[in-house]
Amino acid sequence: MAAGQATAEPATHTSPGKKRVDFKTKLLTLFVVSTNVLGNFAMAWGLKHQPVDLGISPLGYIRLIFTPWVLLGTSLLILWLLSRMTLLGWADLSYVLPVTSVGYVMSAVLGRIFFGEQVTWHRWLGTGFIVLGIIFVGLTTANTTKQEAAG
Amino acid sequence: MKWLLVGIIVGSTALADILQSLEMKRHSVPAEDLRPGRLGGVLRGLAQRGPLVLAVFFMAISFFAFMKLLSVAELSFSVPATAASVAIETALARLVLRENVSALRWAGAFCVACGVALLAM
Image (cartoon, rainbow over all chains, first blue to last red; front, side, top):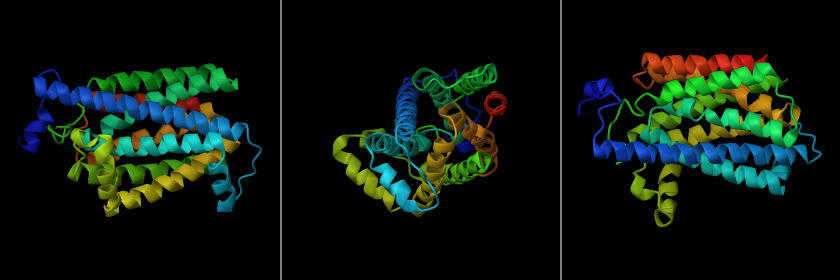
């Protein structure tokens, strides 16, 4: 299929093969979001429970990376980086970015529950907008530049 | 201080994502290769691709700036504030990556950007 034709294909006309690709893309998206949210949470937990003074020196950062929670967070974020890289080969950047933004919402919720952070109505409204944006983008075709990416 | 860090994170993330998307579109990883036995080979292959190495460098800058941000600001601010990159990167995806950004997708990116602005208030 020519690139020009691929860009015009509507999301509703899906073959079984295309559905399989979409399922794999969505599954990988879920993995990307989970590793990101849990990674950020573990990092934040480690930083909140570790009295550290991060200056310009890289030594402070390196020491911090080897504390248990930050190490767990870093490992999860490495997994996130690799899985997201793969996802970017399967789907558009303009699709991946908003859809994975659900992680921002989940981070706000975790911040409220586990750290007792004050989440004002501004933040909840902002969170609502992000969710709405994700829904809009989720309704579009994941890949508009290459149709058989996830084979 | 925290807004300077947000700026560093957004800028370096945008550069990293464009580089990653460009390179991964050229040679994507097939789903069959995402098995434990093949992951080593996949990782070695990725590590030999210049644009991906450069992307990881920018991600590292973003990562350390994010660590610093988490130590001076709340999690519920830090994570959403860095979502400002969504609007910038959607525009770059259209201009640099030649993606077909439909009206619905633009609307989605706009909503995310509005959400970020509200979170930052």
